[in-house]
Length: 165
Length: 316
Image (cartoon, rainbow over all chains, first blue to last red; front, side, top):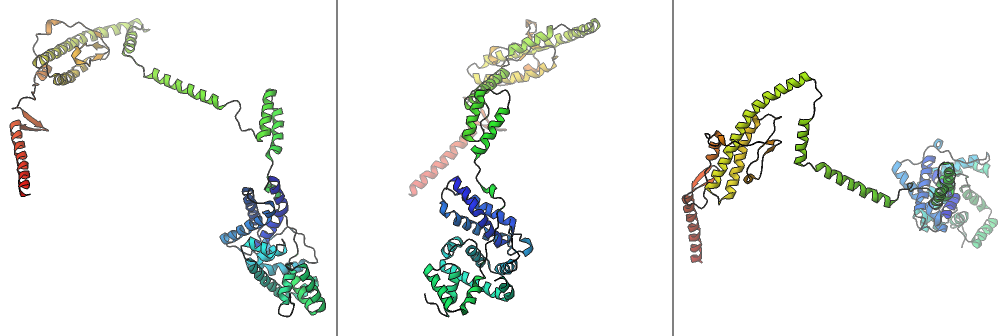
C-alpha cells in the first residue's frame, strides 16, 4: 500500500469505522481514539496490507480495539444523553430510528456489531466472520436471532412502525 | 430453495440481508406476490434494517499522511530568502538539502572530519598542559627562594632597621643552632664510618641502620628557623640526602673529637647480628627463642613424623 492508498483509505473508510465504533460504544471521544489507533496500525503495517483488504483490516482492528476498550473500561451502553451522533435526522423517520436504535442498543455486543456491520457497511456473512473472528454459520445464526429480537421489540411499537412505514 | 411455512423466515432473513442469489431473490418476490399474507412478515423484518447514518469522523485530515517534502520544502525556501547575509551558493545548497530531506537537520558548516581534528587538538592540549603542570624541578624552586630573598623591599627605613635588628638576632641564634646541627651531622658521619668498618659485607643491614640513623637525626632539625634554610650534604652512602632549601655550609673539624651526644649513643647501641652464627637467638614477634633449642625441637618433630611413616609401612 502506498502513501496515496493510505490517504484514500482515510477518505473512504474513516467515517464508516467511526460510525461503527460510535454506534457500538456510544462515546465520541473514545470512538475517535479507537479510529485513530486503527489507522495508526494500518500505517505501521501498510507494507503488508493490500489496498483492497484495507477496509476489512481497519474494521477488524477497530472492532478488536473496541472489545478491548469495553473490557478495560467496563462501560458498555451508556445513556442516550452521552451519545451525540453527527447526523441529520429528518422529522419523518426520527421516531422509528429512535425506537430501532433503542432496540439495537439492547442487543448483546456481538449481535449489535453484526447488525451494524451488516446494515451500515453492507458486509456479507463471510466478511463479517473474518472481522469478528466468527464462522459464517455463526454469523448467520447470530444475525438472524438479532433480527428476530429487533422485530419482536419493534412490534411493541407497532403504531410508530406503521406510521413510519 | 423450498419456500414454505417452516422455511420462509430464514429465507426472508437471507433476502433482507442480500445473501440470496438474484434468482433466489426473484423466487422470494414471486412467493410474496402469490402469498400476500407473508408480505407483512417481510415488512416487519425489513423494518429491523438500519438506515444509513451520515456520521463523519471530525479529524480526518489529521489521520492523513503529510507529504513533508511538498509542505515544508517551500516554507524553508521562503525562510531562507528572508535570512540576510547568506551567500547565494549556500542558500542553493540548503535548498537542495531541503528538497531532498524535507527538513534541514545537519548543523551548519561543522562536519565530522572537523570535529575529529578538534577532538585530537583538544586531547593534545590537555596532555601538554598536564605535563607542564606536573613539571616542578628542584633547581627552579631554589631559584625562586633566592629570588624572594633578594627582592628589594618597598618598606620605610624605620621598618627596614627593625627588620635588620630582628634578622641579626635571628642570625646569631641560628648560628648556635647551626653549630648544633653540624655536631649532629658529624656524629652521623662517625656512626656511619663505624658501621661501615664493623661489617662491610652486610651492606643491606648497614643501609637499614643508616636510614634509621637519619630518621633519628631528623627531629634535631626542627629547631631550625623556617626562614633560615640549610642544606646539609650527606655522604653518598645515604642515597637520600636531606635538602631543606639551603646554602651549603663548611663543616669545622673542631667538633669532631667532642663527647658523644645522645643521638650517637642511640646509634652506637645497635649491634650487628650475624645470621650465620649458630648460637644466636631467634626472635619471633616479641619472643626470644634459643636457636639450638629450636633446632632440637625441629629434629624431634621430624623424627616423630618419620617414625610414624615407618610404622605405617611396616603395618602394610
